[in-house]
Image (cartoon, rainbow, N blue to C red; front, side, top):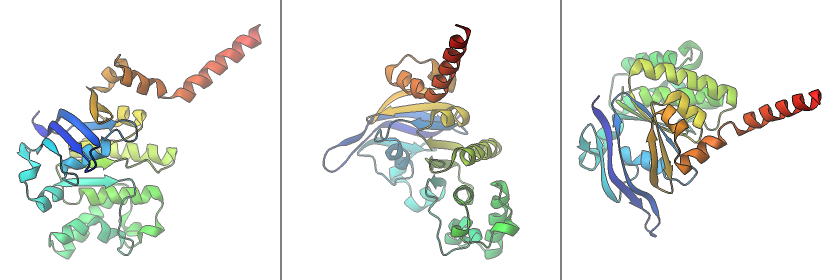
Length: 262
């Protein structure tokens, strides 16, 4: 598969000197989904934002489609990359239909075409346009707003989708529903996706490969099954924390059973 995104020794240092990214290098195949895991402050979101130049790397290069993002027209670059964040960033005074089509509006596309595309995308993310198109964001639940944010990110048919903790604020059941919807949708669209998450379960479910960062450094870049088997200490620690309560509950059940037989 061709390479959609390439990080070449990418570093980023704050003005006061703190290093947030330290020589990150890896490639992202076209059409694949990469989950970026790590503790808070590990550099996940900073790395994600170097792709659409919301963060300019201090050193190294980020290539999109083989071209250095530093040399790209910033507006054209960002319009070719969908971006979904946890808070959705919807315009509160716009209707849902207009929120979905706002990028197309900025491109000067005809109103009827924007309307048609917005309604198509609302259907794609599981929202009935007849019920939702004319509503305002405050009339929607958190999960519904997140669906609208995803629809907006897809409006201009980008080749790359950046997702920064898109489901982090949702309750577990809504989060599961969103993960199912996104998984099915991405399979149909064959997009290249970078997904920042703290949730190993989410990464295992959605991603083709899992990248683990720690203190700005690349620790692992593995397929999901390889990640679970890895003996690298940081990876082992992440896996051990996975479903810790479930394992504890299972142990208590066994303990109670053994006690009952005594």
